[in-house]
Length: 334
Image (cartoon, rainbow, N blue to C red):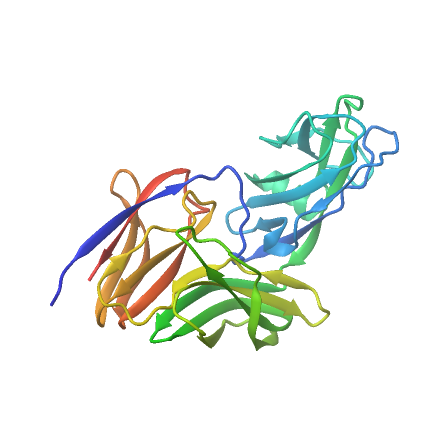
């Protein structure tokens, strides 16, 4: 038996969050930045960037509010921005959270961040009593505001999405916890070129898998892509509702070359990451594999793989949204 252990450093920076795979019990948050807070009509506009887990949502398990907005047309430069509450639409309230790192000195821009809410503020959020207020030079009381509207549970809670290269094909697998109004999943692929793992061209639709419609039980899905040529590819899911609305999952990377000829543990991508990343490894033959993540003190914090794996190339996601910023290590053992 071959025994080996490989480790790689992964760097986690959580200054901005754009989580694309839903956590269990996530609540969609809708924001329309069209309210004038200073009593003067504003020509500014704004909205959340994306919907569901690609935009603004609340993780009801870890009590984390994810904010992702854009704005433009302000009458003067931004000085600060805050989350205010409790208050109904059109009613003023005090600051409960400063939007740390919000761009100032500009009249347009975008902003992404996350905030942990206490029980009281969580109640205000679920009661549609929190709002975002952007303050400017000419409007110290705030020039534009947007109420945080509780949109209810996300239509589809995607709990995992993996890609494994076997031979000349790529096996995709994903799992949902619940589904509401789910028409299905469009599978998309993009080729990776060069050393950097990034989309080199447009995403291409390669298939479609029907959804379960409405379900409160775990559902598992799979799809095999017979890639045209060997190489590295990115895959993502476009989840489509029955009414035509859609969301994208996070992407996973896989090396779709022929079966691995040796053992390999690759650098995670992206690195630094926020809050999710993908860890790729390859096996020359069937092995019992352990893939674990450790903090700087050598404490094990996560087990990503622990079981028999067939020969081939793998890409495994790691979600560090519940861990502090810092440097982590991961090891592969067989």
